[in-house]
View 1 (cartoon, one colour):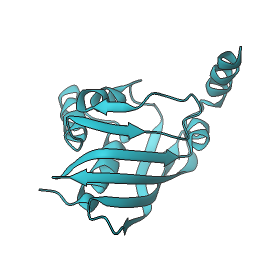
View 2 (tube, helix red, strand yellow):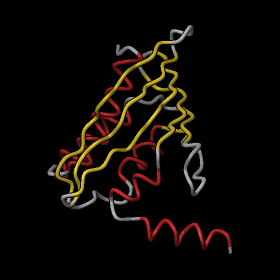
View 3 (tube, rainbow, N blue to C red):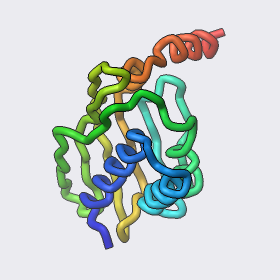
View 4 (tube, rainbow, N blue to C red):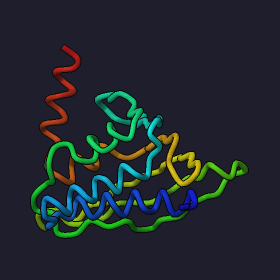
Length: 156
């Protein structure tokens, strides 16, 4: 059984493998299954800083769909976890994972700061609050105009 630290690191590493691309359909499906398996069947994952206010993800199936949504971005030359540190808490189930995704997309370097507050029980994530810089992510992948348009439309 994975420890909470191993579990959060497995999620971040799995996201990196997906984002780098180059996987066959079968490899991508297996990676999505592996990522989803890091979560309990009934879970509660939220992205409090999501500018679009997305709903909580409450099941393993929703997490698999979340990780597989939108296809893989093109132009990803590098996508890695850097400056990572797992902070233990007084509760042995809860860890705080502080890190950055860093990489290169279409020749442009980026960093995406993240802090995940995660409760892991029996090697599976039962609760997570994922704080990440969605604006930096949109900037890295050339999606700022789309985000701005979506935010403008949501105000209408």
